Length: 235
Length: 289
Ligand SMILES: Nc1ncnc2c1ncn2[C@@H]1O[C@H](COP(=O)(O)OP(=O)(O)O)[C@@H](O)[C@H]1O
Ligand SMILES: [Mg+2]
Image 1 (cartoon, rainbow over the protein chains, first blue to last red):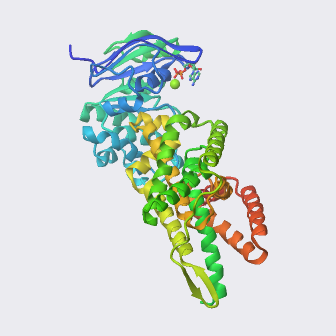
Image 2 (image 1 turned 90 degrees about the horizontal axis):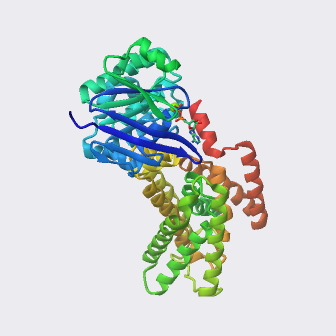
């Protein structure tokens, strides 16, 4: 058994008085594409924020590449090679596309940043729009920029929160194709939160189902099917 | 050029320089970082006093001015670490805390150094145009103001630090998640803002009486320029200072200093009424459409 790239055990986290994560256990192997699914408000985004380090874990552990990063800050985790693409994209609105990418690139240097031109071949629109302010891009373009911005940092693990939310289907399909290609070309591991059935069926190889701050079920390799996933999304 | 015409240009350049140099540091600390820094005038005063003190210890003026600038920058970094850090995104608290810092600095200076401090004579002498005589040093101040605008522009638009700093000010959590060491960026930015305030003091040290309340003579103009400029320091400060300088120097010339001061404030109220997001908001909207 190879060493998992991400191993989460008993993770608990809260917003002030409200406990949200109540003991999450989850394992992701290197090179996998894993979906985290569940209804609105069960704690998926909270989980992602906890994994990148924007929200402190109350208890439990997060191990990345065999190293305990539970107490490490978000910038430290990013420097170790975790890329984060938040729900709602959060591009820097008053900076150009190019400058947004530059922020992502700076941390990648030590690990050999992904060539920006390579990101442009995945997403030619970013090159066309490189001088445009990110805040003036469409939602789909902002999502593409948010992915590109993580990618230029050459992450080994990408955390991706609801990439298809509010985006037209043709762009969602294109994003799915690129995510697959990134994994196939670069070996990047992807853990993504998603509610869109098509996206899950297109790229997920395995899934975890979250309910009330815990993992309620696991969908193993080979069992990602329309009926299985739909059952959990509608649960 | 006739003496009269040059006189207007000179008055404009003088006011423009004063507005830009007073406002540059505050544009970073308030405009970019959102800290309503009531101690801005005391950062400037720190630059004045350290410049004067090191000058009287025997340093050449330029080196003394460098010391004044550096001292204010250091004070800024230390202050950021000790008291400012919890105040980002809490503007009203930042106002109260920095007001406290301002009072402590003013009273502390009075108690420790007394009500006056030896000044420095204005260097470089004067030159004549037509029948008028002008101070050469005032022209140096104008050049310095242009230099400061250029420095701030290059620093924030053309360097890696600048990209990280702007990302941090726009969305600190996201910047951190991309590996930007945001605490260090905040400390450095605040330090640079304080150092620019110190530079303002250092440059004006040879033109002023050194008294512990002298910071108050800068802070109104500094805030006015930043507010009129709007949130984007790089787009806003220069046009704001230029427009305000035209108004102020015109009124000064025709109606005197008091009307100039009052007219400036009335103009600010009108401008902010018409352009609620300042010049930079207006410029940004124009270039977007
Ligand atoms: N910043 C916050 N402060 C307080 N409560 C929050 C905050 N963000 C989310 N919550 C609450 O935490 C729970 C989980 O939210 P979230 O992780 O965003 O769910 P999901 O991404 O699965 O839809 C929800 O009940 C939500 O109301
Ligand atoms: Mg969510």
